[in-house]
View (cartoon, rainbow, N blue to C red):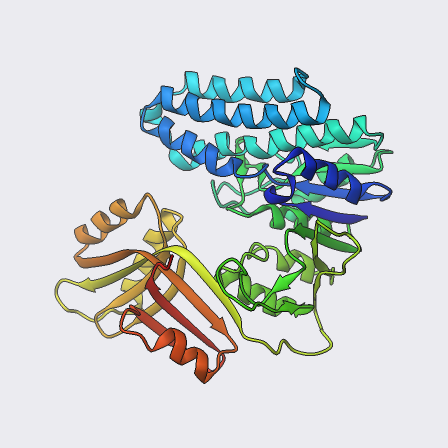
Length: 419
């Protein structure tokens, strides 16, 4: 068994779906994980925001755009006016949720999982139908019934031991290919759960672990892993090999390589991970594994946007001791806010965090517990691994840098968002 994962960019058009067919055709024993098409997750998040604001008309309008986008892909693949009953059924389910629920009583994280998860359900229904029509026997698997997770909505973890017999049973059939959704699973209470943004990589890694796959491949719109995002930084270089440890550190820093949870399930069974270009399946891409022939020799730059720098200080100027810090981190965890950088002094704690709709609630809670809070938004976090003096001069020695943190190998900079 091999596991392939296709992201939203690779299936954002009908031609992308046809290219997926070209990549998987002829493969035997293949489990495919697919994300929502294009920017569907963003669109469903906007729909949910309108719903939570009690703007049902706005939510329905957002969803109509989602439907029109997918209907266009279906028409291109199957012919004008063609309807897929399995897709239409998903449309009706979302419309029912939007019509029947009371936004005032809705918990955001729970409703995020109930609604945003439909992007993957719709995309895989379309692709499975297309592959079967193209003569590739394909079994569609509902990962909400196959991946059992904890109850942490919007950022769940998969229970691999409990999920293993379910996935093995689903893949015991005669089909050449199995297709399931990335990003989603099922919580203990039967509700759908999601695994965090870009969680489809994690889904594929868990599937590879359970199925004892010989390899996992992530198909992307680049030659392999580059030392920086070519859309942001000039003169990027291709990196043919990385260790598991390299990949974990880069993913945690915000690199759009793989989801941070992806590596552990693969490392536990020494399964190599390939990052390959979906535009040319003959190219080797980049391999991530336990040991590599030679260490990475070029600096790696990672830019993480939509950051907020929060400074917290006790009103009474008492020391910022460990018990005070643990309470602050517990509060951020309660609201699912990720902390990306920490710096402390005797009476001050500085945190670079992901932007969150819950920030006003966090600030109010901290004020009520005797803290003074200041924050700057619209920032970005730049991480440079393997920096040199030239890079320090170019990126760090500037008056507009809010905070910098340097170790022997890595420097991290919080700065205003660039264009």
